[in-house]
Amino acid sequence: MGMMQEFKAFAIKGNVIDLAVGVIIGSAFGKIVESLVQDIIMPVVGRIVGGLDFSNYYLPLNGQDMSLPLAEAKKLGAVFAYGSFLTILLNFLILAFIIFQMVRAINKARSTAQEIPAEAPPAEDVLLLREIRDSLKRQD
Image (cartoon, rainbow, N blue to C red; front, side):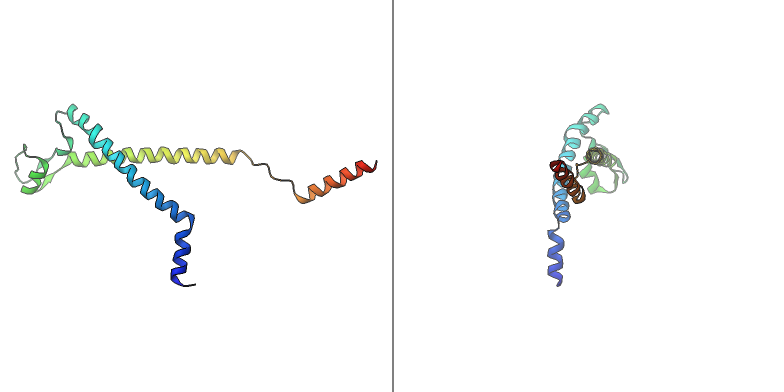
């Protein structure tokens, strides 16, 4: 079997396609969570702690003026951008929590499905015994 045929067999397997769909949906979901954090949660947090844009919080390491926006301060030298880091950290924590809840729900559904035994069809010998029984009843 050639390498191209092996790759085709690998790529067509359901797991690879499921993985690709998961990556695409995960990417889109990550953008939704990022927007939730940056556009809804962090402005409220920033307002509570006294500023309007929390992601612009930084400590200058090169003597920059604290009133400069983060992008301008970075142009002038190194900065300790803790606001941006905290925004990304909160983004990660929310995403991780949601994924944990999804995995938890899937595992619960799987365990519930495994608890309900599917009724197996009777074995061939059982069917034969039933036929013998029925035929004996008819003879009596």
